[in-house]
Length: 215
Ligand code: TYD
Image (cartoon, rainbow, N blue to C red; front, side, top):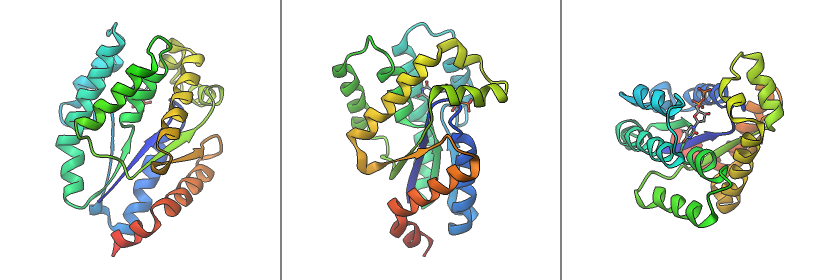
């Protein structure tokens, strides 16, 4: 089994790259051995949680934190773990690093101690550890231009560019804590260039496992 997570700020192109990764892996392993899924909302019943989490009605960052964690626990127990147990390779668009970067590390009023504690929470509840977290790194201004071209600026402008720069810095903190499990990809280029770099990074990191898996 193999569990690959894609992370990055809004507008980093994760969803496109998750789809391309799914197609590439399907070619290597067979379509029935690959699942592309996402958080929040990637489980039956997840739409309601997704709407609540993204609807703007929550006033507490911890309310948001635990809602994203609830979504993750259900997604893992209903979708991710059953797939991994069947030997399916799972590509997940966002996972625990999103909650730690968006809800915790981006928030200047949350200290390091709380951040470490929350990282520990996801470990003690036994969420599966990704084999590789692929960070699609892009600056907030470039990400904003992409979202603008797609007409999807609402949440970006509501939170402000500085928030997204803090989320980006939060990802760097997480990557430094466990460099072995992460690869960082420059996501500012065009779709093909980014996918090329992603593929090479994964081949370097998981190469033997990828071929062992296909065997
Ligand atoms: P996403 O589904 O990636 O965006 P899109 O709808 O453009 O595909 O993510 C939705 C938003 O949810 C995004 O702004 C990031 C945020 N988010 C968190 O703040 N914390 C989390 O734990 C997760 C999973 C997402």
